[in-house]
Length: 194
Image (cartoon, rainbow, N blue to C red; front, side, top):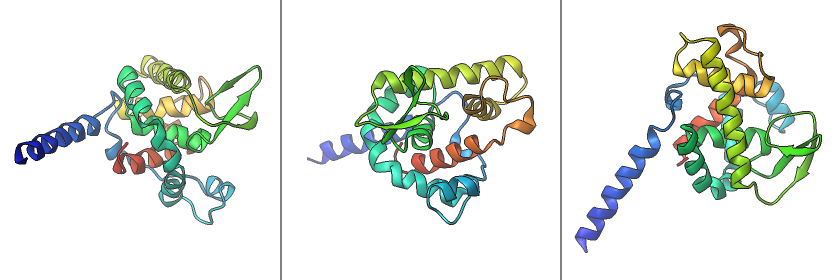
């Protein structure tokens, strides 16, 4: 019986070390971010902003995000993106999969000026498509700014993902509200098992 407990303990340590260092774009636990703007907080019914607001919004979305954890891990490994970052994007864009944005002739997981359409589940292919788009934006930032750090690539990729190609013109654009909010949510979600 004690050998079983020892084995389970070792497996949990392996899982913790594996999930704590995911991603090719820096360690999100080390990111400093101011969190959500006051406008984001107000739109979500909060009377505060910053990291506290981002964490509260991630906490609200977490029960919905939990059903996607296996998908987030698989997609995260495929694209070398921390699953907590993917969860942070899903939290920001779809409230943890509760809504999907409908844009033009199709549905996408990006923030846009479309109409909200309630859905029951986001598919693995949709999460993969969203993450592929994010990594495309990150790689574009790497190509345009080859001397930047992995952390800056992730920040730039998130800002370009939300603001559109070419949004980031220099380091002054790396603190966009979308990036600050997603990273604060991702840090919270990372601390809670993502």
